[in-house]
Length: 233
Image 1 (spheres, rainbow, N blue to C red):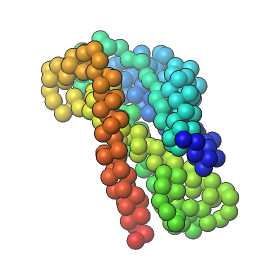
Image 2 (image 1 turned 90 degrees about the horizontal axis):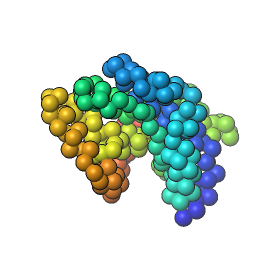
Image 3 (image 1 turned 30 degrees about the vertical axis):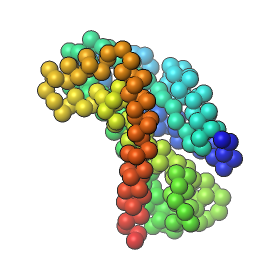
Image 4 (image 1 turned 90 degrees about the vertical axis):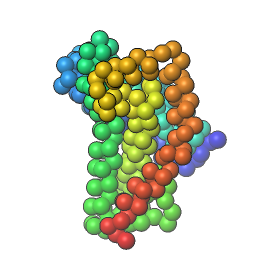
């Protein structure tokens, strides 16, 4: 369904989406390089320039975000960072850290957005909105510029929290499926990797995660909003 309000905020949505995706994929690439696999670095993914990430996944970085905003009123998509599967099998725990690095980047970006919102509250140029939504966690008190900043911060915080939560669901092909290998010995992590790589599991994982996500995310979002406002209540 066409959402005019969401489309009016489309530039803010896309800037927030593209920046978090670039940081997410660059974090994967950096963790892999630190762990001994420079495949993504050589492929150009170890960068905060979004263009290499767009060129690698134009469908997930351009078309799907536009369609999801148009049809659902919020933006989703994906990127990818290449890695050496033989390195992953030799070092399953290092590969798990690589997987965890992407969601960790989303967590840090959400914390950064919350920090800026705290400064805005303290400085008086941000205030509590009349209602809370993905695009309205705070509102600007100083005219159009502060309203635009408030909308961007709200979207940026919400989007990073959403993608952090979604990517940590422990089903393939999401990051959580590999990251969970950190909780078990490397031998078990390798067996889990073999299990996840069976034909059809990635499609099944996406279907399960998508259907389960609402029940997982909205409580997380509620807790995050309460934490955001807690110092001011």
